[in-house]
Amino acid sequence: MNETMQEYFRQKLVAWKDELLRDMDTTLQHLQEDTAKAADLSDRASAETDRSVELRTRDRARKLILKIDEAMLRIDQGVYGYCVETGDPIGVKRLQARPIATLSLEAQERHERLEKSQRDD
Image (cartoon, rainbow, N blue to C red; front, side, top):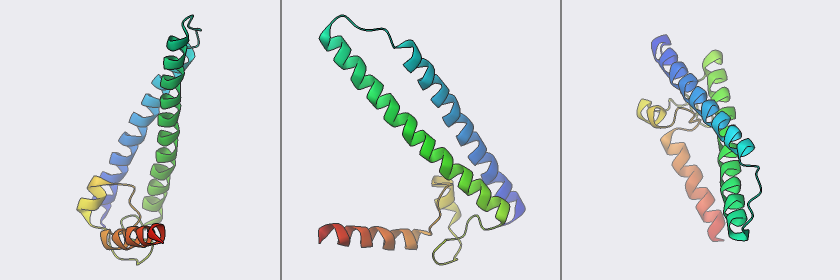
């Protein structure tokens, strides 16, 4: 992968991370503002459900940010865009769709088939 492509994906990853961080800040502010206790039992249950969903979303974003940081580290190391299992290049279309991909499409499909066969056992 040439330097122009690497820079393109770096900028894509940075923008994605910035968006996730902004969303996490908004969620945190919302959670802090929503600490008022509801008088009605159903309102309280609804608020707890909303809070649980927001916390799960925040946790998913946190994990995604870690993967984005790992992808940027791979760019710095010059191994971004190559499958960690086979060493083959990961297709640009795949990287466009999932910039944090670490497996080529073929390796990912093998991995998913293996997981499915182990679940079926």
